[in-house]
Amino acid sequence: MAAPLIALALTGCAERDAKSEAPVELTPGLYNVSLGGGGFAQFSGEKEGEQTLCVREADTEALAQQFATQYFTMHPGCSNSPRASEGNSFGGTMTCSVDPQRAQGSWVIDYEGTIAAEAVDITGRMTIELTPTPGTMSAEEEAQLKMGTEFMENIPLIVSAKRTGDCT
Image 1 (cartoon, rainbow, N blue to C red):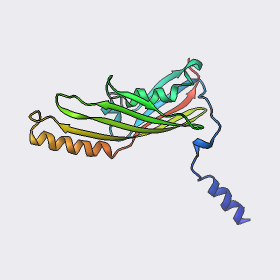
Image 2: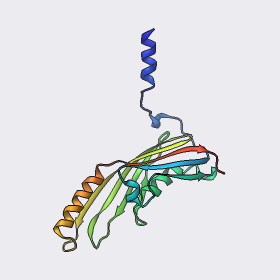
Image 3: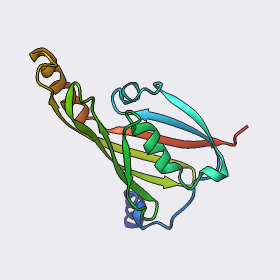
Image 4: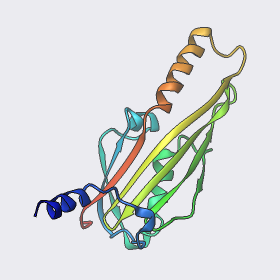
């Protein structure tokens, strides 16, 4: 009797393989969107905590990639290169150039996400490649930039959207 109970308990712990699932579409309705990752919301210019979003039926097909574009875009010059979806898994790369007057380089966010009928979860990791333009920063500013870059590269950027009901 113990073996079936152990097997049952272990199956509940198995990690989801969204790539092998039959694709689903998001259910229209009211979604609670939360941002996480150590100050990511503040960095991206979004409000801390949670936001609500009404998703209409016409918006459900492309919504997962739209979440990535909306929350991972640092400025209007960023570009998103989405990968083809596999099952209920999607991902891509967001690339943003930096202010060329201060430094040369880019911010690159590689992201992976999953879709369920009533949820979208996305995790991104940032890589920052910067070379300060000579004469634009003091040694102290360059050291702070390096420290900030290392900090940002070590935190996950998380977007989570869960359906909470119907739009009113």
